[in-house]
Image (tube, rainbow, N blue to C red):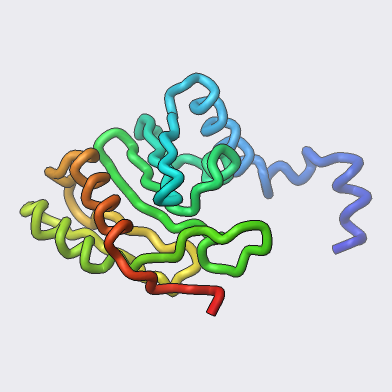
Length: 166
């Protein structure tokens, strides 16, 4: 690997096929933030950031993570809603202690029942490095606001289900 480094430093564009698409996605997401098309509303008491913006492809996680320290992310792409735990909530951080993970399996079931349409809500589990809760199947009939309120209630009431500190 070290033998490639000098060539990389001289002509990084030679390796654009390895990093170009990722860099373009990052730049696109940063541009959406800079233009105010993606916004973040932080709720420090829940270690939650609600990220809202247009459904224009996937947002690059690095662009989101550099704009909030929250380890719980509710991503609202127009009407599509997804929750994610960040990696930092899976490990022992020395600089701070993020909120502990709550198992959202029951909330996923509640959302599925409330949705009443084709598809279901799925939570990947607290033991995964960066688990998500998202809708499988057709579009949800629930509003992003309803989902946010139910998530906040579950995060407030839920017992920690993953504790990297012991």
